[in-house]
Length: 52
Image (tube, rainbow, N blue to C red; front, side, top):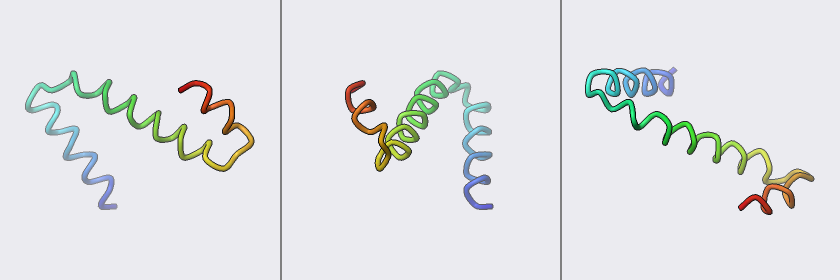
């Protein structure tokens, strides 16, 4: 429940401060972290590493 509250507060911050340009950066960082976490121990790891 606490993690969702942090996300909600962050979205309110973006809305109030008009910092919408931060959203693409955060989305890309989340996608990259998911790729790294999910590909860490799988058979896809060699293919993911060739992307970088």
